[in-house]
Image (cartoon, rainbow, N blue to C red; front, side, top):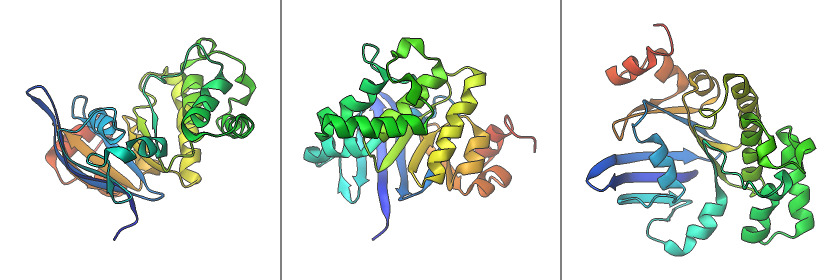
Length: 246
């Protein structure tokens, strides 16, 4: 029907009586980079957490290659191994070395043998420029280094899609660039990516499509040129005025 890897259909999520997502529809195709932008509190991170099944949607469907993971509970484990997540605060295991952080998932979840898991981890740590830190513990790394390790850890699971939840927002300004460089390298490699970000220039430069959310709804979506050069909705226009001079 389509070459979509992920399809979100009328997704709703409430916490108690507070609706956070009010009916979200969009899709992510193979090889596509979709950036989700919008003000704080608009539901962006909750959407990503629902997609990765860290939060259970209140209503709606999340289709992975045509299968609804909300209804088909038996496929959730395999689904979550194929949809990687890079968190705002890294979520590394503090008691493990950098290498162990990247091998534990493939070995325990995918059943990868230790030798292959180590080879894969070293390959991805080299890709993000962290292969010389394999014996270090996370506490010895800067924020930017931790985030690069987190990306390598996700890549070691051989995901179909990588979800990024504001991956630079917890970093010092001088380390933001090193993480964005790695993410741009992944774009060049053809990785399918769904990125919640406040980095407007990154979204403008690398996205195939930009989604603007506000108040639990998708207000507008389109190409970077459409959204950043000629936004149609007044809410999108007002939001972007903070980042770019009109």
